[in-house]
Image 1 (cartoon, rainbow, N blue to C red):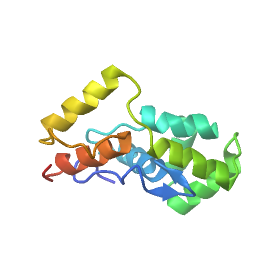
Image 2: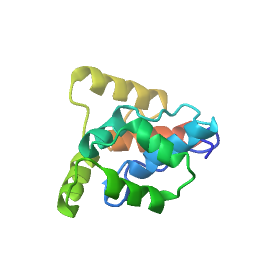
Image 3: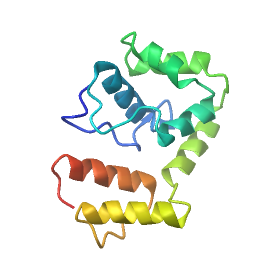
Length: 145
């Protein structure tokens, strides 16, 4: 995984019902291989997953370092997460995370500034954090606003 050449998967992509999990695994694998680019494993977005599941980020990173694929990691998470959740709870958490918006003026201003830097000054379609991350990944790797 080389995140200097392409972005991680969208935060909207799900694994086992969890949004952000595939993106987090991409960032973890890139960090392990020394090619994270501008991306950070265990960022605040990732910490939402760790808080919800009770999994320790370093413990998960050690499992990922063993070379397991997404399916193997998901099986490990399901077996080892201290906080067990039903499918509907995972679905509701994912819906909530996908709809999350900047909650204060400082965060809203940051997102607006970043979108403007990317050439998207009048982008009313960028309202959630996931919208912003998808936009930023697109622009960072050569796309146009």
